[in-house]
Image (cartoon, rainbow, N blue to C red; front, side):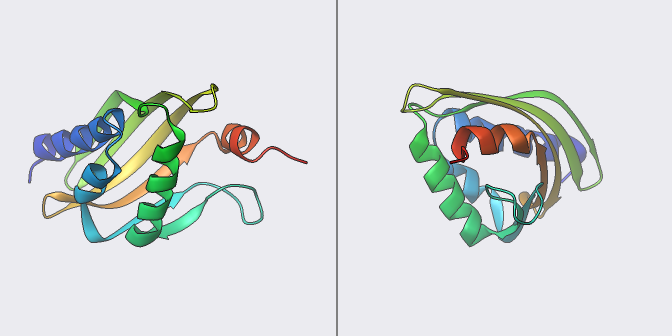
Length: 135
């Protein structure tokens, strides 16, 4: 696949979030895909390297928190060879009435027409304060 096709794949992946379709998003990933999330050991929340099986559990739990999905708006994207760098904003009403909004930068690797690796950088403090409040 060329860079244009890789960018289309990444756009399609984030479109699945709008549809609250975790299975559809995961289907765009290789069976051996990995997803690394920024964060330090001992910090609250999910971080570190996840397998696709672990990511499946994370996505299912995460998607269940939202009223009707989470809009993932791609702000910018560049691609070279098998790599796609993407800047994304999220916005989604939670079932408990709060709203989740975050900013991300993701470095994505594509292999054989599917996403094979992701490195996710986001506001980890915001995630911890919203989903893992102290005490």
